[in-house]
Image (cartoon, rainbow over all chains, first blue to last red; front, side):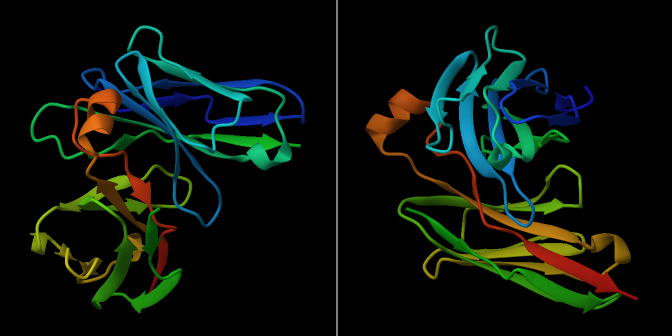
Length: 116
Length: 122
């Protein structure tokens, strides 16, 4: 297994367009997370899946954002009607609930979004 | 709410020792992580502390004091490749009713500090 995979790695779009990012977690991990990171800041939590169920969403996740994990494997994060403030690195992470269950996250390389 | 504080930037010299501090104010603290992040790359796991004391792993050590809400990451024999951002992150214990709704774990997702940018010079 090569770890958490995200694509595209870079996306440049015009304001108002929709974008979709995909995350393929480590295959045996049942938990999947989306974070957003801007320059000089730490990652900010967006949402969390346990298998296919979306169990937690941050207030940062406005109604323009939607995330899915239909079969409990890969996940997509869609941003509709993008705004310049959406420009950020979108990080996906996964973790396992097998002991020892510390909550350690394994991150992907991220998808960098630039909204013009 | 949660508040995690760490210095914004630090500089050090190759071969030296540097200590990066992290303080947190949370309710229901569970554990604390340190991650390293090179520019343009994913955060990678360095250490995890849940009990008070020092955890040593090669050149890196991490300390936790739960009563003081304080942790530090100690980097010894600094190398140029250690220039990176160091992220402190905490997890919280979930209340029983939230736990049963949220997940089959007893803790929250990771909340990160803003990171400390360490620059190692020759």
